[in-house]
Image (cartoon, rainbow, N blue to C red; front, side, top):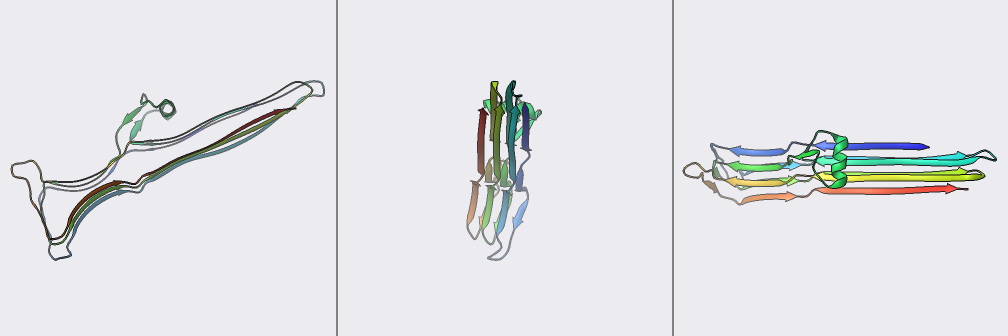
Length: 212
């Protein structure tokens, strides 16, 4: 009998932010742009490759048996607090949140409660451009030979999961105290947020059992 179990997990929390808050900003000149950007380029990769080859050989008048059992799990978890990674595997499998607590890993760019006089353009942008990849390959082959009572068993299981809680937010807010702050710009004013995340999950599973 051959048995194998592997768990690979990446857990990412926190966030990315760029901000201007309070006070005033004056820029001079036609090309004096004001730019506030926040970008997440993080890359997470959880990859497992497992190959099992088992052989059972009986005596000329005896039993021949071979068994292979394997279970693999690859996880990327973003924006969740995990107290027990093994238990979090069941959350991923069942689509629940019994063992994970959601805290979004947001990407934010903002100008808040600030007076702006800008000679050029104003750009506030937030971009989620991360990569999350899980790849699991589980190949099990067993071969049993003998004369009587020959048995061969191969049991394989895989879990490949990306659990994400993340967003991109860009704002310009004049504030809430008394008179809102003003924004004056000669050039364009652009506020943009984009989610360009790439999420990939790849699985290969092969089980072969031969008794002869």
